[in-house]
Image 1 (cartoon, one colour):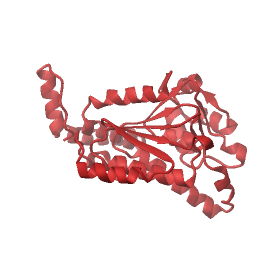
Image 2 (image 1 turned 180 degrees about the horizontal axis):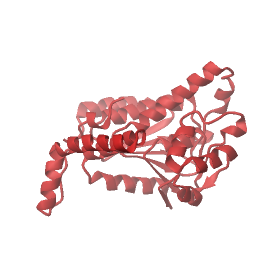
Image 3 (image 1 turned 90 degrees about the horizontal axis):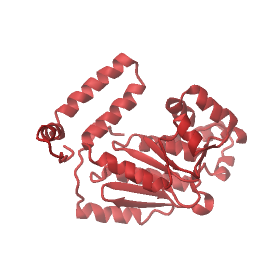
Length: 283
């Protein structure tokens, strides 16, 4: 997977690229993929199944995330679900067929790969959570950078009640986000938390009346900033969390140097001194 510094962003779309994108997105059966300005919106569209993460949904999410990564005109991603759920977990019927250690491990790795693709995108990614975000659905939201919930949101990792454990990153991303003790509380009890408690725990960043509108508004706020700098800042945070402080500071210094050498840095600092709005080109 490429890192944030491997991408140049611009604000336009090539007609040929748009035709190819339309061809691919029209084939998606379980998702809606739309680009509104510079924001991609991916909607899991299986409301009759509460947007459960079947194998087909996971595959198509992987395709959609790769499309986002390949599109230099997309500078933020919003991920949501249709109907009464963001995503209500994995497809239990499929899980029941995985009766041995090897097949279970392979299933977890396949799901983790999709979550990792989302987590590695070099742009801000925001989960808009309305209704249920349970099990694999919450793990999908955890792989996004930010989470915006509405008042109907119910979040949880109920896997131990089924005799299994979270397998798409929940045992790793949740404690990194909210701390070990709070993560144990949610994982051990399998309980659902509402929007206000999720905000108190640090599980979501904002609680709003309309999750999709709130997430889109947050995405819009990021668009005024330099695309390369956003990607490098994200890389600094993610890589730094896996390192000790002194090593993390070295990573930050390296990426600061890379940011300072960009055309966007020259434009941003010049615009500040000239007291005008910067016009970033993603270079």
